[in-house]
Image 1 (cartoon, helix red, strand yellow):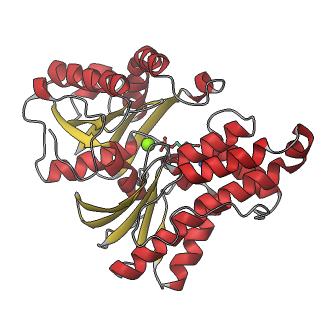
Image 2 (cartoon, rainbow, N blue to C red; image 1 turned 180 degrees about the horizontal axis):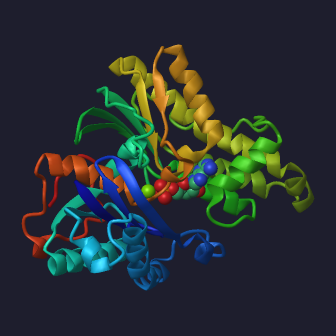
Length: 353
Ligand code: AMP
Ligand code: MG
């Protein structure tokens, strides 16, 4: 089964062609450079940038899948179109959905609406053309979602079956890293900048910022208190002192932010007795976080999985194609194309097509 997928929920315009779990092509235009000076996504810019690039990205993905040199002929080999319908930025989602509908009508192809967060979980199972890595599904898993918009722990019981057991009460972890970088005077996205600064001082924890919600007896997260503590700590410093300590500040912030992920993940492992962990979302690209998760899971004789290529941690369309494939196997197609609408606040496990 060959699926063309489209993803435009935030600042990545992405399209992919997949066959089952195999990625035949995956293309992406990232808008991050447009936002460097803004500190985050600007909706009106995002909409226009998606509109400007989407055709090119889709044509490119179809071409690179080598189905046929002619686009119309290649489209005849596509069995379904998968599209992200939420959660995300409403006017950005709309660009992808409208394009998916247009292609579905023109080429008479069935549509599958995909939840972006499920995509981040299934990103762990994307394979290359040769079916590597093999990674079988061995349920149940705990999924840790760490992105710019979400921080959650989810029990993933079987295909397309999720239970959210913890989530952030305010900012997402990626968002917190972005804000910390901004407070230090850097641009967007902040996660990779903080990672590099912290690495230069071997991730030392000089400032010991608070570990949000560490003692609370649930699996939820909160990052606004940490952000505030960081803001006031930096504000107390002279410019000179701040510059001299940039790396230590970044490192201590990252440590506090990741420690609270580890604390809650450990609670969840103990409580659910599930020790197979899937990690997804932009922040899962972070090598230091990966190391921390691996050593936690080792304590419980479990295994931690990360997307098989670092660029599948962030937004991409191949992950949407993999979810679409499992939805197709359960016959979960969009029944009425006209009624498919964006769902900016779609929750994981929520069915809304
Ligand atoms: P997503 O929302 O899945 O598109 O991921 C975007 C978020 O991931 C942003 O908040 C980035 O700062 C964050 N991010 C990307 N790369 C890294 C990294 N290497 N370390 C930490 N955070 C990262
Ligand atoms: Mg995302």
